[in-house]
Image (cartoon, rainbow over all chains, first blue to last red; front, side, top):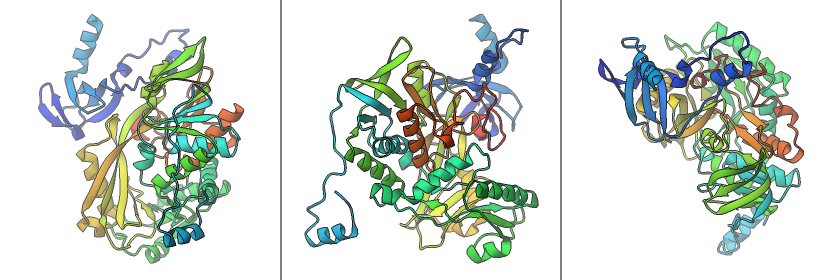
Length: 94
Length: 416
């Protein structure tokens, strides 16, 4: 797979470390009466969709940036690549 | 029809006209006691043990493709019981015992070959870890032998003992481990279940579950609605996709694992050999091809094919322990989809929806578990309580802190 890095252009996926579903960016708040189940669901459960999947790729053997890659899990086609900070901004706007 | 040497001899003399179909092709009934979703190894073995050991015969197996078209036909056929943790090892030893008697049980030639599984070690620390593992195996009633480099050299003189980076210091040997003809496992179980009245329905895809008042009472399929008292999901690889139709999120990610076969070679490899410093495992099939594999690709995937970086990594692993295979050509490679769970261990459990059961999360170790998985799932379905060797394979074990993590990697499925 070739990942279109926003600044560095096309990079081989083997330069990256895969860190899972981008939902993991949104850790629940740790309040005093936070439910154990909320953290269990955050840490252990996954949507694991067959189709469009937003996921974290860390450019470890490159510029050490964190990217959110939108990829189709049924055919490995990459639909969108963005920096995590840009993704979070657009997520908050929504 | 019973298969025997005499029968083969007789049919050979009379033109092979007396062989019957191995299983029927029934149309689905309106209702069953139990529906098993997934006609792969685990689904068929569940149906087999339900009908042959637990006397539950009003059972249907629904398979979206053809029998055994999933991972039972895509694996590297290795059987072993060399786990460390007490939640796992008794289960896999139970499985190995079922493998040992499989052909007598099913009256089907599954070519169970106990050729021995060798796990190589490359350092003193790794040797200590393997001694511990071997002791854990022996405690469960399994066999384990520790070989030093001299003993291993007698067995496998072609290994690269003097490799500068990963010298081979010896191996943990399980003599009772080996390989099995994987497709024949599915066919043998299907035939045995069919003979006891189980309906095996191919090309029947489940589109949704019928859930009323928190109870699952049937499934919607491309062949219409089929009702049942109990619905048993058994579709490892596609568990996430199927269970999302019931609104269930699982502690599982789907990943792709690749496997490889070389061109046919003269017999060179008597055993199964695994590399201890990288991820590479190899055996030789009866047709002569070297069957081997390594790590999963490492990203979520439902595509039954992988990418080139892992191909390179696997071949490097092979070259590091047996440079002689460098001139063999690769004949075929393919990918299968694995349910990678959050601790690397499987699930055989009820779900929170009444009447809906779940079997999955086998990571890339599901083949060797086929008999025990089916037996324990059948036990759970028939008696509504877990089999003693599978009682820790619960869906809520992460919430309760009862994680079964052989590798100690934590909740990162692509590292298990």
